Length: 324
Length: 137
Image (tube, rainbow over all chains, first blue to last red; front, top):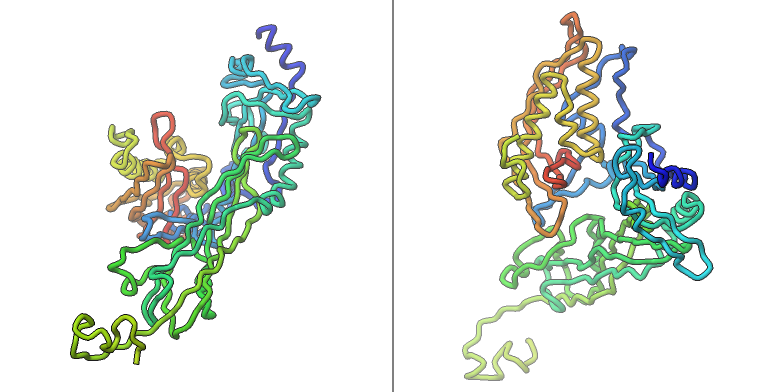
């Protein structure tokens, strides 16, 4: 050991924390043990059965070519890892301090406040109750952690992050319709939302917090009493040649003429990281609704006419004439 | 591992997915799950679950027969803007039979299955790793 290492050890402590303690369920990975005393019937080892047991069930969306967790089936959203801010800054091996930590200075962020401590964030599976050396995997380079007792601050941030998340000026996007503003009774009107993932840099309890809000589900309210969703489908624009003929996952056919206010409500989930630490899930969601757009549903009428509008501008259906 | 499966590309990931299921087949056959664990992230709940289930069926002299995978169709939706990639595939798993050390059956067999599955992976430090796997319903 180098003298520098000893000095550092004396002043440093290792802080263990669980990012959000609200998840109390047992991680699926620890469902079976392989201890010699395990004489009960062995578990099913099938791929399909296993997917059902751990809730690894997905929904495929042909329009994006991607899959998303099927709502209500996936406990996989629970963070399987625990985190530690290693103030020893050990990159790999018990005695190797990352030289980046010596080079890193963490000056006070506001006059009169405490200096920060260089740390390296590490993660280990929650299934390991008392992770040892080889279980903790570094996931960041040297970074600053501000607080004499960072564990408390992180717990305090975790306690209030949902409230802060819900007050952010997150843009709900807009609801778009094709065709718009006029559409036809009985034809599929294509709807899509423009909600996107958004990031925010905040200061909470003196710590730099980077927050990401991600749209996960949408509920379409068409204004005629019908709704669609919640669904992960954001919809997508289609070429004009397909308007009113191509049915999409998010299209809607109005059964009557009239003016309808349509909106989309998007559910956002969030993650946050403190002082460039690992991203932690926010245990709660936020629902935001787009401004209403007015869909004017018309009907078509056909008639046989003798002249073109050039020949007779007053002919039935020509611009400027009253439909009769 | 095939050279192609080491490549950070659409074809590379498709080769990796096929190889991943071959390694998992090997684990069913031998009880040796090390390679499958190496190719899978701790975030992959199904990967960890299958490894534990296989290991539990190779303790106390127990053993498995069958369970080999075939993956006839693998399609990756490559997105060059993302570090994490995903694909979908057909997963056919043979019937699994379970035996005690004395050769008697240790539990009812698992019938053969045929599913669409989603496969999520990340390329880090020169190799692919499965971050999540599951069936599509």
